[in-house]
Image (cartoon, helix red, strand yellow):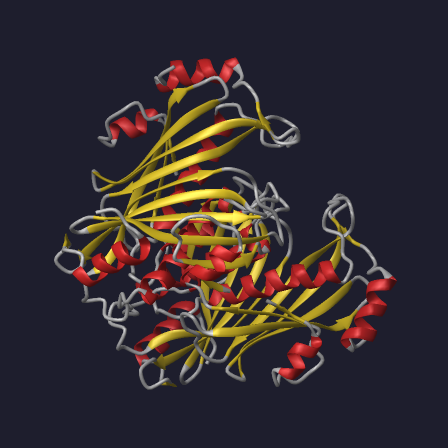
Length: 150
Length: 150
Length: 150
Length: 150
């Protein structure tokens, strides 16, 4: 279930998070250790990122548009997660540059932070293969709504 | 969200379905055709199967127990599914044998059946590597609750 | 490594198989049972299918072309597979129809068949959303090269 | 195909890399942009990591042993990769600590670095849930063979 800011705040999670995805761990998330595999957190981040960017006005339908491309990503794992565990993945833009922006993520479960992630996204003209400026409407939205640094 | 029989019936889905998982299509479900990849339906079936079997009393925690093992599976695809589409995967046991049972699945979206699946599950002693009889309490549950043939 | 018919025959595998993909089990193929997960065999079939169809002359680059779409699939599992195990997935067309064709697959390891699969592929105009005839050059190729029934 | 140090050096790749996995991009690696999905590079790193650690003497068969657990990971993406592209993922240990060590990865294709990754691995007693010292034989191996800092 998608969570808006109000729902995130009510759940007790602190910070300028803008959107969340509340779900539970599925069997296909597990690996040979019976816990959630490392890679799966990236899937959770990606799935929320696409929802967040679409709701923020990014248009993925025309692949000739400048597209947000992941340039770098990092993650810290705090503790293992298990089958059926409920969790919320949250997202916000923490920083805007000229052609890029940073997205922060956290995974919360039982009021603990299970993992923290960050990705640097570059706006790219995929046909020309080069970066293009971040549209000012997104820049302003990220600063105003997400409290992004600039 | 997990659906029980009442919720399935209220949604307008016909049949002796016992349990459902209501969800929406994530970005990671898509392939190069921008639609849900064929393999993903098997993931949906598997994730619901584990929940369904656990709630039916199967104990997956002790790997020395006889385990339900997939022996065969089939699927029919009716129509493509797309990003953000809401759907419900449903499950029931349609037949019980001495050492095996059949599980049926469907994926519904917008009151249409998008895919139908079936898998034959064999109870196996994984250490000895051979089939063992299906416990009579599961056999009776499947016949009574799921209207399984026998 | 991709295997042609000669390499398949030399390996001792019987039948009219046309192409193979020889590989070994990776960690990401495993599930909580430390064996290859059921769904992964579908991934192996799909990956080989795309190579096989491309080498057979199908053009996936222009999505306005009629596209081969999976309409139904089935699989039988014979025995578990484990980390680092070498295996070969093989493919051939076993039957051609007017708008569809059947592909057969097997997974061999240590001269044993670990799994057998089949999928029914329909040629579809994805924009109009309807089946179109299988091009006669593919039809003839499948009959001549793969010994497909018709 | 697994590459040893000699094979890596002969291919023209510079650095103290210890092991590689040479492969080609499969259809299942792609996403809606027809290029390799971001998450897949983590799969490549993980699959090579398990081979590398096993060949280095780590014993994954007894889950009561201290286990290497991923504590943090980062990745930089340089350029997109496409279907059938041949590539080599390479690995080495770049640093050892008391209870942890750093693994570096690169993905090379056509003599270009497509992605660079790093992960911090902590040795953990999974039952007690706490870090344990890195066995001195691994420590010495990483320093001697991989030129790891300490």
